[in-house]
Length: 343
Image (cartoon, rainbow, N blue to C red):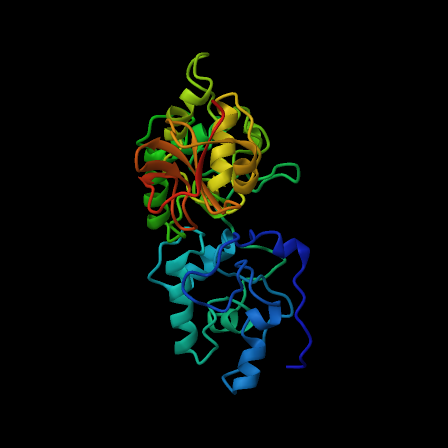
């Protein structure tokens, strides 16, 4: 061991998809992005040398596998580890098996298959002739960007996902039933059960359909109001109810990306044909104060406002409350600073 970083040729590394942007759910040594540290650290070489654990001759060039990786090399590793579905998807079950195997061999249990772990598994299968994969995961072309689908998404790619998931109405609308089906599918594949169709879930579904539009969604993501009369303040509450259940996302202002409190109110008002500013404090300053709120008016908390909701009835509002929660009908839990209206 010289301490020199091992090189990973582009031809070999390109065979393995990058991990998706979520953290290792099992507490491994990967970073917040799911990509891990440098190849030398990820492959357990540096850790093993420092701790005195077993070292062995390693290939001069290997493909590193970690949570979220997919493809032929993942299948080889799953076959050699044993006790796993050989599906070519490095999910949570494969991660747990790798860590258990590393501990049994006296390696650093980081859940990453690097040089030492490949050596313990019988050696890296080689970079000049990659293992044969009878059902390779389709790889996006350079001009194809994977579209992430989540609750509220619509369009052709949602229809494709619904067809592949099965048991769903293929209507192109990512609603509650589709989200439940996605979570169930992710659980069976050992993926993070977040209900979002990202790179790893697309791979498990047979690959992202680049030919269907290169990652663009031909159908605009918010559904328009159902009739031409659904305009004005009286239409605000019915429109807001369409988005119940969409996750809170700080800075979010569309159904496809999620909502924060003022992102929800500004978006719903726009769908009703009304303009209000983007933030809660701006909305509070823009709107006329009222002591007799009607459905569709806004409820403000703090002055300047730090939170806002849509008034529904006495004591009730629709709001995007806090991170980890969803848009919901809830009680007005404390005395508002004021109500705002455009009437």
